[in-house]
Image (cartoon, rainbow, N blue to C red; front, side):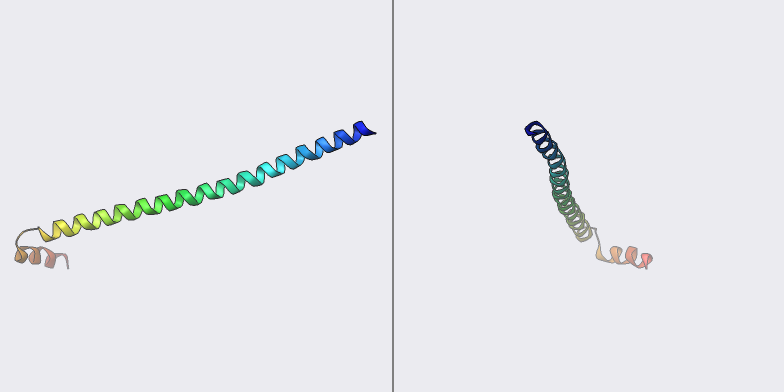
Length: 76
């Protein structure tokens, strides 16, 4: 009888370990996904800010203001 009880406890421990491992893995995956999404968002923001700064810098040094107005007028 004691041997049967030992096997039962071991089987329940194995099943509990598998369930605990799946829950733990899912939680880790969600945390990793959130960190990756935040990192991607920051990287995208930094790229957009850099492109905007480049556009402002190039726009301010684009030459004669009258010529810039003529080029821009054609775009409208």
